[in-house]
Image (cartoon, rainbow, N blue to C red; front, side, top):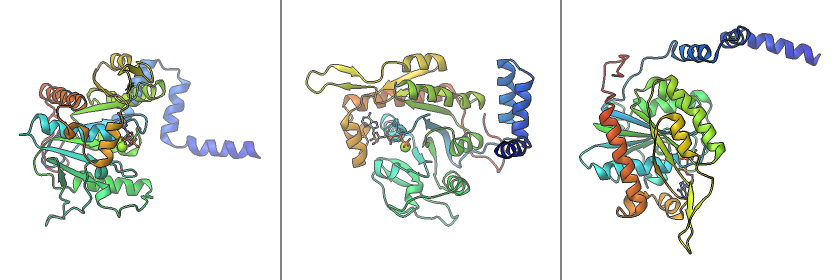
Length: 321
Ligand SMILES: Nc1ncnc2c1ncn2[C@@H]1O[C@H](COP(=O)(O)OP(=O)(O)OP(=O)(O)O)[C@@H](O)[C@H]1O
Ligand SMILES: [Mg+2]
């Protein structure tokens, strides 16, 4: 009986085209490069046309495979460092983590955004950075219990219904992994480049490498890796103690990108984010702030050399140049 049920289930699943394509690939014993090509074709087939966010020139995604490695921390510090190193540029920060929005606390912002006559949300501002997060739109402390469709609606609000004005660099903090939110972002928006945040632990590196495959398939450049919580500076003797080893350099080689910077596990970093004062601006002559300023310069340099500029377009027009 159980066997019969499993068989029925298999038949149901196997009716779906993706499983049929999968089994077809398996049965014809294709080579790795055939499979890679096939995967690319499937990913690209029927993708919606990318449309720029009104007024936003460059979109920088901050991603990771694993959760809790420091994406939000890196996002707020990178955004503030970009503004610090180039005050003439307009910088925005978009929090696309609908279940665990961190940007309101990390940027010390809590009020509700105004709605313009065109029914668009006005970003909140701190440290010269325009910010938007689902956390500004829901009641504080209320649990966000949303199914996928609601998450997509939330994401649509954040990406299409915000009055950004002119933004040179929009830093986008993403939820962990390669789920619906990330897929939707990479399929619908022209992304200038991606920053991958990881700890040097094998478990995190492996998931980061696997997750990076999506950017290769989608032809989105990886600007570089940022290694976080990599070591401790001993408080008594200042010796640098590696916590998880040094695998990030190898990962950078494997992904053919640069390791842009490395941060220690340091209570100053977590305290500053909890206070809503990013370490990059708290003390701009500190070593940690200088590392962020150096990363910001590398990111700007990358963008200058890879001018995929997402300009405003008419509805539905492809605008990845
Ligand atoms: N270098 C660091 N030193 C000490 N604490 C850190 C460091 N980087 C991040 N943290 C702390 O680690 C926790 C996780 O960081 P953060 O929220 O930035 O990770 P995340 O990748 O965005 O997590 P999630 O996947 O849940 O979105 C936070 O409490 C943050 O303050
Ligand atoms: Mg986060």
